[in-house]
Amino acid sequence: MAAAPVWSVDPRTGKQREQVAVEATAQEVDAAVRAAQEARGSLADRTVRAAFLRSAAEELQAAKDGLVETADAETALGPVRLTGELARTCYQLRAFADIVDEGAFLDVVINHPDDTATPPIPDLRRYKVPLGVVAVYSASNFPFAFSVAGGDTASALAAGCPVVVKAHPDHPALSEYVAKMLRRAAARHDIPEGVVGLVHGFEAGIELIKHPLVTAAGFTGSVRGGRALFDAAAARPVPIPFHGELGSLNPVVVTEAAAAERAEAIGAGLAGSMTLGVGQFCVKPGLVLAPSGAAGDALLKSLTDAVSDTDAGVLLDHRMRDNFVAGVAERAQLPDVDSPVTPGAGGEHTVSAGFLTVPASRLAAEGEHDLLLEECFGPVTVVARYEDEAEVKAVLSRLPGNLTATVQLSEEEAAGEGRGAELLQELTPLAGRVLVNGWPTGVAVAPAQHHGGPYPATTSTSTSVGGTAIERWLRPVAYQNAPEALLPAELRDENPLGLPRRFNGRLER
Image 1 (cartoon, rainbow, N blue to C red):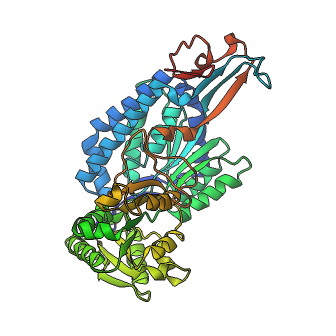
Image 2 (cartoon, helix red, strand yellow):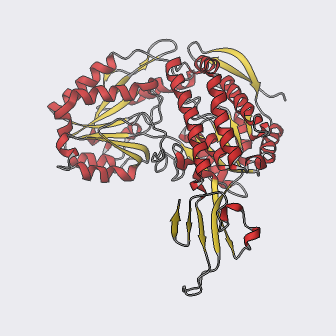
Image 3 (cartoon, rainbow, N blue to C red):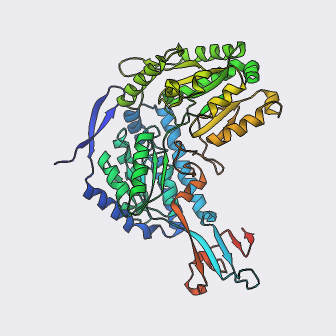
């Protein structure tokens, strides 16, 4: 049976544009993984690795116009957004190159023998080594930053791990284009092109996670798809780490004092965050706990005005559009749910932004309104109106894990008066990033960033954004009583590579 063709599709019209490739067979997946395995040695030298990452950024930047045009044709995200995302992707590659150069990620620790300790300590030297071939599953909503050259790929290559990427079906032509640029960068340093493999197709994704030479996987996508791959990774004869980002509601709590102090600003900020990118951000605020009464009413008026002025937009594909339209209609039909601005179909190929309101008491106990506690991908949020602090606590106690949680406080609460600190403590168990008086959309690429959270936000405790994302693709190994001449250079006393390390309990930089 012939493999199915892979088409580039215009989300603005739903029409096929061009055939890009064919879905990979099991044999082709195997070939891609084995080529990646063969390329491992070419990444052993950290200097080469860092240069490769910087060259990748240069190649992508040089091809900016063509890449943005291709991405916009397949995603309808617009040149401005895509140009910014490409710049972020190039910055991320360069940032990981700097991390590779510095070498602190190796976590070198050396202990000389100490016979006076109880029990005695032998000569021990520990550092981290790359896992091996990493499978990367691209996201739909970030065709650059979370796709072929995105954070999973950049951090894996920085760790010394070749990758095989399963392209997202929403941007197959862009995936091929980006992979070509990465391979061109690899060739500049005599690195085999197999260091970045690319496969298309649903079955190819299954074959990839099952391949015995794949040592870890990174995924960004739906709860259903991610959980299926997570289970497959765990069910292998040799289970492997699966770092999946699956879904997030990203709750927001607005205190009564904050609403009384700046209702208009909070409403406008919420509207901007929930409609950004047509609501297709993984950190879109999907549930807002806002007070009843006059302050909450003022907030809703501001939100209504801002959302009503938002133009209809195109989602990434028609399947997402259909799911959005059906999902908001089902939620709007629940008892006591109102639609001050009705979300749904904006036209044959577009959707209109909106929001729903519901008494918070409806969410405080299990029931049919639990649907409102599930992520709805697109430009919609749910505003739950609470009567008192007890209702806030009751709703928060029922929420699953999230990427972010946000609290909007008054000036006095932010200064330590009232429930500010208590609310932060209540939100911390729910999310990997807790925000005060801000909005969760926008994930800075920074050393202190954490983009992850309790399940189902992610399947591990790691981050997929920021420098520490490299830790996902490494494992520690210790050498005991190994002669100096046999040790890797990273673990020798004279420190020929000039690495940051902990030497006999002392931190050396």
